[in-house]
Image 1 (tube, rainbow, N blue to C red):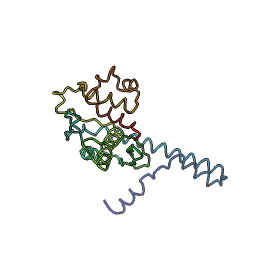
Image 2 (cartoon, rainbow, N blue to C red):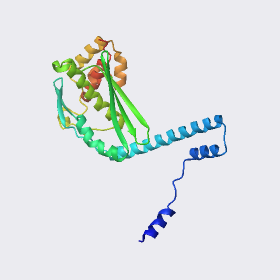
Image 3 (tube, rainbow, N blue to C red):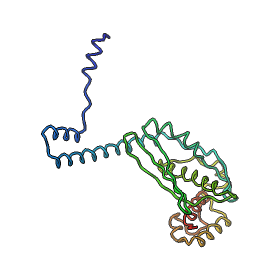
Image 4 (cartoon, one colour):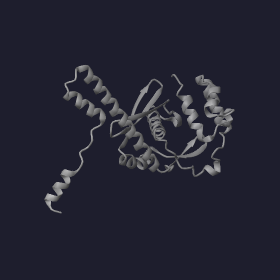
Length: 239
């Protein structure tokens, strides 16, 4: 293809069509519209842009979520005396970051510690400017004789995992020991006693907790949700 032909083809390419709100604003400027009219049109244009940015975000997020595989649980830990497996933050990031990037999405965290609570906010952003947040709070994890810095760090990491998973609706693969323990097995008597004592200690509403987990009694709580219950109750501590 000659240079002239390439230039002709380039000149024939259609120009991008401006959004209707911008066309209205341009026409108003050309007609010499007054300040009040321009202000209203600018507001309309900004709302239109925000609406389009949200639509782009939702489309990108939907596409990305369809591509994200089930996250592999690559770490093992003890919850009381009960072993369980979970996916660490690095494994989640390794799995999702390239997929999010291909769809113009990214994530970041904000955190703060106030009084007895550690708070983490996960922000999912799209390249067109729209973003959504997911926030969780919990008390520092003082288990296993952690010092104050380790306790805060442990809770930060846990909340980062939880807020990111919640924001993206991520699922994790089944526990490799789930068949032995029973995927829906109830907590042990010792774990139930720990929760009951904690309910009394923090003054929590037991009936509300049972309703939240859709169970008839504390002993019916599934093992897989024990840590979630602990986190919820510990978040009520005031000192």
